[in-house]
Image 1: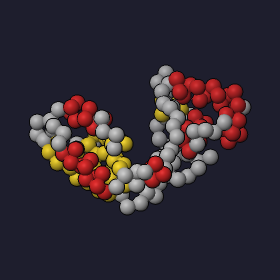
Image 2: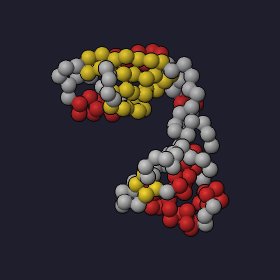
Image 3: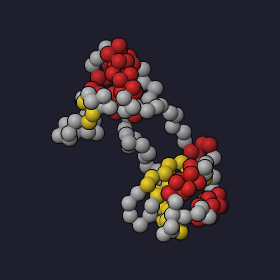
Image 4: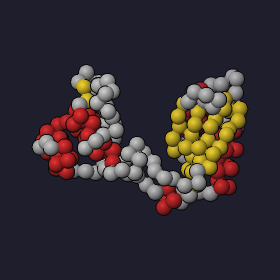
Length: 167
């Protein structure tokens, strides 16, 4: 299987200092595409035994490379039909911790990235409709330390996640 990472890149390292080899990278790619894949299926795909795959995945989990598994839900199916990317521009006197705590408390904020550039944060926001987006933007602008926001409404999602629809 061809992974996303070229062998020309420097070796990636586990926290214990063991390099992530090509088989580990294949396992990571396969689990990113399908976190419910059985050890038998993973073993078949990478050419190892199930116990060997179980051991490798366990080491990747113990090292903090694989941090969890989750269900990927269609937002529209649960009533969240509007997605927006919101840039947060901070005021000159800003308390990052206060902003981050306020953002973390907002269920509409699905993802939050600290970024370099004109905005200090970029958020992925999911809401039911445009009226809910307007309410969310107003709430964001009321957070102490937020000077203003810049919003881009997503028209359609072609793919999400690193595997880009493969798998």
